[in-house]
Image (cartoon, rainbow, N blue to C red):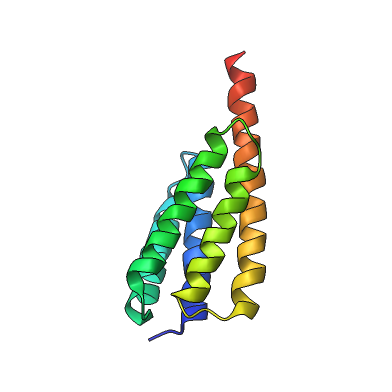
Length: 128
């Protein structure tokens, strides 16, 4: 069994692979590896968590808010909320240490928010 910190890093790597596949469709390896890492990391986080329902709700809320960031006309609001939801869920229910959760969540939130905003801008410019 792996510890919560390592499982969280695997989840983050999996999310990154899936988002990369969504931004650059056609490459199969990042999406498949990302989905596998996401499922394996979530499994280990949820089985080792004292409150798995809160953890799962936080991860789903963060994913939904990151998706809303790519659709929202107000930049960065949903991205910041997604980062807070992810950080809160993994620290409170996932058992991930603060020294791992905060820097990783801030970096991931910042990168995903910028990438999703660029995707939104590209979609809007293409429509015109």
